[in-house]
Length: 159
Image 1 (cartoon, helix red, strand yellow):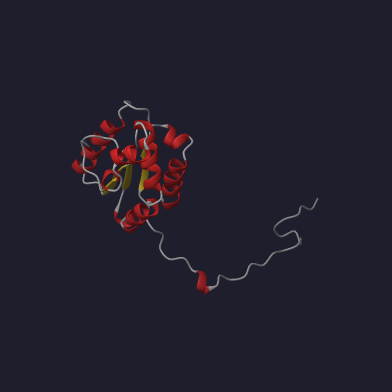
Image 2 (image 1 turned 135 degrees about the vertical axis):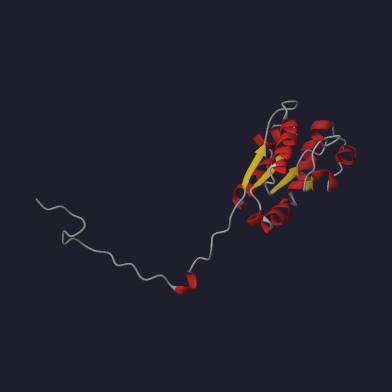
C-alpha cells in the first residue's frame, strides 16, 4: 500500500533559493494600539487618565492621543490632541451644526490628516510599548462614519 507524499516517488517541487535582494531586515517592534471606545459618560476619559497614571508610574514608553474635540479639560497629558488642530466650536459655527454634528465634522476634518498622526507615532514605534487613543462619546463616529473607519484602519495598518 503506497501513499503519495514524501519519499513515495511522487512529484517533487523544488523551490529556488532566496534572492539576496529580498532579505528581510530585523522586524520593527510595534507598540500595542488601544482605541478606547464607548458611549458618552461611560468613563473613557477617566480610564485614559488612570492609564496615563499607570504608564507614568511604571515608566512604560507610550504615545497618548486625544480625539475628543469637545472635551473641556483633559485630565491627562497627551502627545497629540485634536483640539490643537480643529476648533470644535468654530466648526459648529462655520457649518451651522449642533454639538453632535460638530464633533462628527471635526473628526472628519482631522481624519484627512490622520496619516500625519500615524507618521509621528511610527517614527517612535521602536521605542514605544503602547499607543492609547481616547475617542469622543459619539460612538456613531466609529460605527458608520468614514472618519472612524479611516482612524481605526490606519491605526490597525500601522500597528
